[in-house]
Image (cartoon, one colour):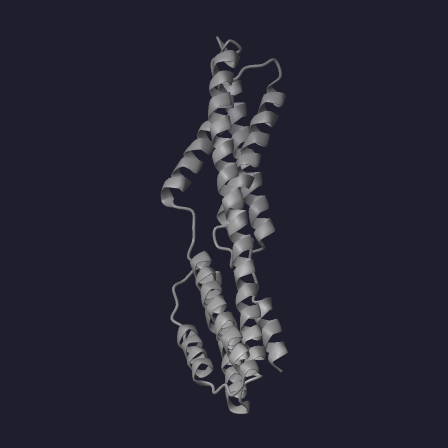
Length: 252
């Protein structure tokens, strides 16, 4: 099912449930003192709603940053791999050819083996680290007969180190998620923020029902966005391995 259709069902369902609950409370609940609750309940709602909004904003901003960083890390990794390959072309023909083949194999491993597992949020075993280590060994053992080759060899080694760092950042991003404690606070705060307006009173029932339904829909939408953005490589973010596909094309 589409992430958008699923989100629409969640948001619409929450709004309907909240509207029905508000209607039943207003219709069958006691009216005595309801309007007098507005001031006291409003003050409490301001505090609870404000704290909840700050927490949700903090979590969503952190998740958006994590998605951006994961995307940047994948492009740094692929670009570093290409740069290392191009620098190795200045070395011996055998070394340059082996580095290019190993780089192509590494990019293929990331696309075919690692990316599907990261999209599902599962642990996986991959030959990626060993392939990178083999690349490092080939570059380190490549002969350098002049100053230009020495410089290109150092550049290739430096680019491979950046690939190592970017790869680790990508794997760390794939394993990140919102902790259970934060989820508990988010859900509890959402329930409190939705339930407090049920204590409000007013002359028009339909207006009260609409307000509660809108609040429930908005909070549910934010919770759904938080859930979808936990894993940058799956869910709503769904980062793709385009950087590595482009790198394979550059390898020829």
